[in-house]
Image 1 (spheres, rainbow, N blue to C red):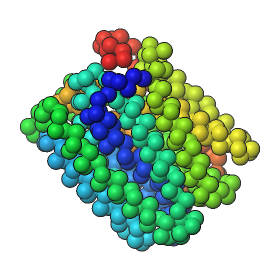
Image 2 (cartoon, rainbow, N blue to C red; image 1 turned 180 degrees about the horizontal axis):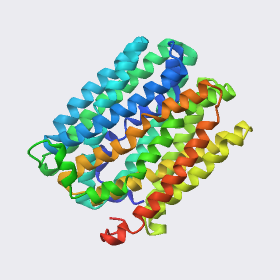
Image 3 (tube, one colour; image 1 turned 90 degrees about the horizontal axis):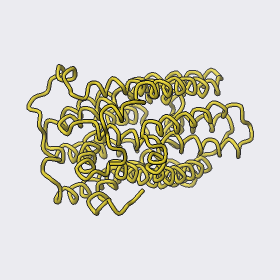
Image 4 (cartoon, one colour; image 1 turned 135 degrees about the vertical axis):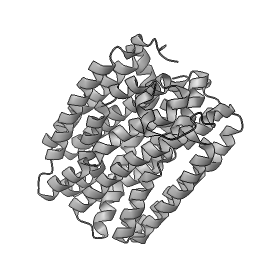
Length: 399
């Protein structure tokens, strides 16, 4: 990937779009364990994680419409202030407050509006692959930081958790000045809306409706991911009794590897001459690795496979984001990204409760097998629905 095509503005936007990686990196390790420690059962944790996805789906749709309706910068700043404040409430350690704050943070989905801003910048300059891959790499680098700070509870107890949530909130707040700095030099069209009203009837009239239909396998991916991904650290904790500090190190290494992988994604896409084939290949390999993980009892080997799976599966994300960004008209981009996120998020609301229940009843490995099966179905459907998409609409690869 040539970084020379990404200017200072692109770096600012990519950084702003990726700072939430700190939250992802930290919460993927400590959130379920933190909830367990403040008195929540495994089943309840699964339900809360599932409801988070449901709220995220609703938030994606609402924010998607608002993104195309109003000034995107003001919307982003408002959502960021609210999101950061909700994260700070997590320090209370009170189950009902923690649950409510966590769920409300999903409703104010700032990711959708920021992705639309970054996407418009990238589309105007013809560097969608480069910008989204760079953003994903930065995201993963920040997630390494997030995973690394999860050692704090091992040394500081509850204070360690509090410090982690304060750092997460600070990361959210910091995105505001980054975006404000970048938009000084951007085309006003990036931040101005084109639709004049909000109506759900518009969903059936979008010019991008044909694209949205072909993204439906993302619902199967979301269901599979929901069953195990948010509970993966808990799976390691329950099956192998790995402490939080060691899990943090593993996740940090995994995310560092992913950072390098996402930088390679555009190169793989060019080598295979197709974003679609690249996505299918990477996700297919990741699914195969996941399917054999429950049968591995050599812990070092299992952790290596965990890192490989995480890298392969998430390397596909910037390529799919880039493809959608290239195909969606500017005035529909907020809604398309919002609907795409919603398609994945609704099934994720069901998955964690299934995974949590199975773990509660002693079937620790079954969630991994279920997720592998669902991923395999989705990968096949992606290939069938998207294989001719780049040629059909004459998308110039690599732009």
